[in-house]
Length: 397
Image (cartoon, rainbow, N blue to C red; front, side, top):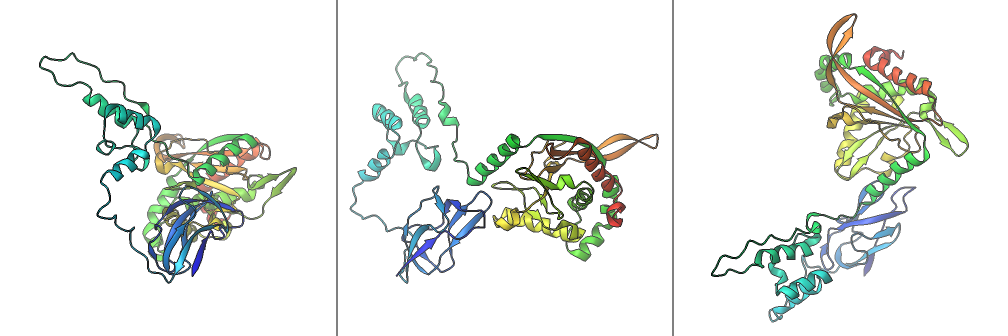
């Protein structure tokens, strides 16, 4: 009995995906619920599992193709035993067949070169994608064999310049990378983005972490990081300056009385922003646990569309990569994003005396259509006050 493998529902706003790769080949045996292929959407990567046990009879959508939700990816012949690999070639198959097949798969320009110079394609190291032979590969061999040995020393002949194609690698953009590019450009084209800066003394927060680090980890099973302080500070500032937590919808301004804080995370497939929902109701331990869980899910490609949707404000920490200062780009339709940066010791004047302090530059990028300069500066000062005096967060001051 043939059982169709279909593209599953992937979230309310996701209607299309790209087949990133197949884990099985046609003819392979499959077990029920075994991963068959990987789909990539503009938000997450997810696996498609076998609906039945049997043999993968047909792959209808090859890797790299776009598919809609509900489309048939392939067919499983339920209850039929499959082979681990494709059938072995017959012993009497002509030896020239592989060479002819390989030559037939060459690009026209490459085929012309190997024919003109009598080169066996299989003898040339291939550097192209998927093991393909490139024009540069053949030219390298031609350059190395062009001057034949002679009885008298041959004049030195300069090798032809290496083809630029041999030094390039062309890779198709993933759906997620394309979506990131679209959204960043959308933000620049549609919003009046402006960035304001400040600096914050991290000494008090660092002292609190040092004093309570072991006790906190022992009680809650998670390390006390910087991000929980900034999330709590952001909620306090958003409560005071509601325009930063709002968005523009047509001719309307939508003010949101809930605080879903997006925390930018670097994943193998690109920068993604999972969301801490109702962050105003979360304690330090809950925030740190949620961020750690997001990091693991991002690394393993397990983030869901629900994890990535509904954010009202974003925090991005470029400091973990050593960034000293940056101007972050808005995450549409949000109107504000806070950029954290590297902590660096600098000489500062404290109470009339020069002291070494652990300082961090902060950047707030905002949509000037909805947020005035006074509001943006006040918001950033509020963040600074909460970080430099963490008791304000605990006492809701």
